[in-house]
Length: 167
Image 1 (tube, rainbow, N blue to C red):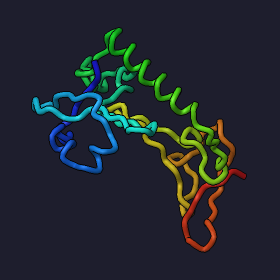
Image 2 (cartoon, helix red, strand yellow):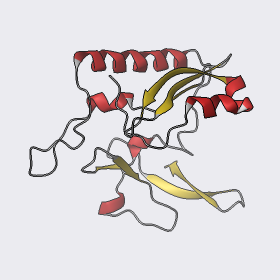
Image 3 (cartoon, rainbow, N blue to C red):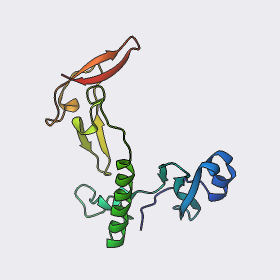
Image 4 (cartoon, rainbow, N blue to C red):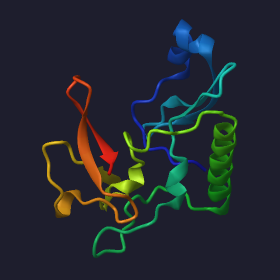
């Protein structure tokens, strides 16, 4: 029920042959790529809340057709109730794992959240956030979302690295 559109996955025997990877992670699932070759599609760390997927649980929520047509942008996406239930279950599991953390995000000034930036959507369901650098000015292409405060650029110490901060 998951969306797989891959051709460069890691074969289970190759995964198990790497001592570092095999000692840290368990293979939870495998799947077949677009050429029918088996690949590792889900892994879970031993003793740590680390997970990896080589499939797209978010795709169930993506609908759309190519501009001016009835042709689906990605016709292979399974939108069945089973696929929706599985994607929801995975999202809930990840949120529950995140809630176990005691870490609190405090660097809003240095690193504003992604939704503070202008979002563009492409024909292929991708989301592009345009983040301006110190030498760029705000214009129509690099505007900031109205839900966020105005941003200014600063330099971190004498490292020369640019970052955005809230005024």
